[in-house]
Amino acid sequence: MLDKREPSNGEDAQQRYQAILESAARVICARGYDGASMQEIAEACGMTKAGLYHHIETKEKLLLAIMNYGMDLFEKQVISQVIDIADPLERLKACMVKNIKLVTSGSSKEVTIILHEHNTLTGHGRKEMNARKKKYVRFLEAAVTEGIKRGQIRRVNPTLAAFSFLGTVLWTYKWFRHEGELSEEQVANGMVDLFFRGLMPVRH
Amino acid sequence: MLDKREPSNGEDAQQRYQAILESAARVICARGYDGASMQEIAEACGMTKAGLYHHIETKEKLLLAIMNYGMDLFEKQVISQVIDIADPLERLKACMVKNIKLVTSGSSKEVTIILHEHNTLTGHGRKEMNARKKKYVRFLEAAVTEGIKRGQIRRVNPTLAAFSFLGTVLWTYKWFRHEGELSEEQVANGMVDLFFRGLMPVRH
DNA sequence: GGTGAGCTACTTACCGGTCGGTAGCCTCGG
DNA sequence: CCGAGGCTACCGACCGGTAAGTAGCTCACC
Image (cartoon, rainbow over the protein chains, first blue to last red):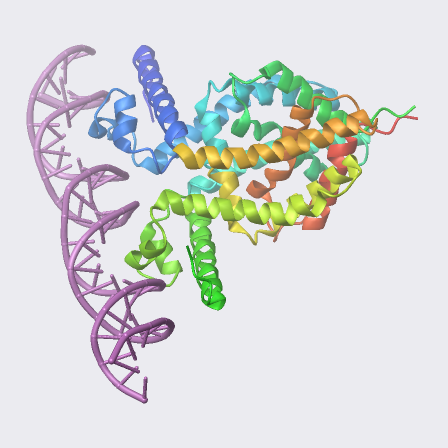
C-alpha cells in the first residue's frame, strides 16, 4: 500500500521509470530483445547495469513492462479516441487511421516491440499480453458485426475481417519509412479506402 | 571446375545440405535467430557444433542460406504457379491464395523466418534479401497497374495496394493456428473476398 | 539516521567460432 | 588386387568474449 503524501516525489519516480522504459524500448526496438544487452540498455538510460537493476527485476519483466506501457499508449491514442463513435463503420475507419498513424509515426517504439516480439515473452507475462491483444480483436469483430446488422457492411466473417484489418494496419511497421514516397496521411487514407471499398471498380 | 562423373554423390551432398537448412530453420523459427544457439542447431542436425561448422561459414551466412532457400521455395510454390495467368485480376487472386496457403501450412519454417527476421541480416546479405523481396512487390504492383489499365481494378495506388495485399497475406504468420476455428481454405478464400471486394455492401 | 538510487567489482554460464585430429571411403599407380 | 595418398565429414577440447544477474558499498537528501 503506497502512502501518497508526496505526490511530487511519486510523480518524479514514475516519470523516471517511464523514461527508463522509453530508453530501453529504443534500444530493444533497434537491436531486438535478444540482441539488446542489459549493458547497452543501461547506458541508454544513463546508468550502469547494476543501477538499472535497481529499477527492474529481470530482463523479461522489463520487456513485459515496456509492452504494457505500449498497450496503455495504444489504448489511449487509438481505442479511447474512437470508442464513442456511434456509427460502427465510422468507428472502424477512424480506428484504422489512428492505428496506422500510431505505427507509422514511429514515436512509440514500445508499440513496434509489441508487434515484433510477439513470441518472445513466456509464461504468465505472455498470457497477459495475449489477453490485451485479444481484447482489441474482439473490439474490431464487434464493430464489424454491428455494421453488418445495420446493413452498412456486407455479410463477411467478422474474425477474418478483423485479422485482415490488423494485417493491413500493422504490417506497415515492417515497410513504412519516413524517407519514402508515401506520407503517413497518404498511407492511412489510402489503406482505409482500399480496405473498405476493395479493388473492384464501382458497379454501374 | 568440378568433375561431375558422380552425380549421385553431388545430389546426396546437396540433399544433406538442404536437410541441415531445414533442421536449422526449425530451431531458428522456434527460438528466434538470436535465441537459437549454434549448439542447439547442431544437435537438431544430429551433429556437434564443430561438425556443423564444416558445412557453413558463420551463423549469419547460415541465416542467409535459409532465407534464400525459403525464397526459392516461395518462388516455386507461388510466383511460378501464377505468373502465366494472363488475366491480372485472376493472377492476383491466385497469388493470394497460394501465398496464404504457403504461410498457413507452416511446413516451410524458412518462409516464417524470412517474415520474422526481416531486420536481422546485415551488410550485403541484407541487400540481397531486400532485392528479392522488392521483386515480389514490383510483381504485385505491375499486376495492379495492368488491372487498372484493363478496367478490372479501380484507380488505386498500386504500391499501397501491394503492401495492403502483403499485410493481409503475411500477417497470418503471427496469428494463424491449425487448432483454431478457421481452416487454411477458409482464410485463403475469405481474405481474397475481403481484399478484392472490400467491406461495403453491394450497390443496387 | 534511514532510505532510495546509484556505483564498483564480481560470478557463473554460455556464446560463436576454431583447432588438431581421425574414421571411412575413393582413386590410382604398381 | 593391393595399399598409399587424399578427401569429405565429422568430433572433442578449447578460446576469448560477453551475457544476465548479484553482493555490498557510498552518498545525497529528507
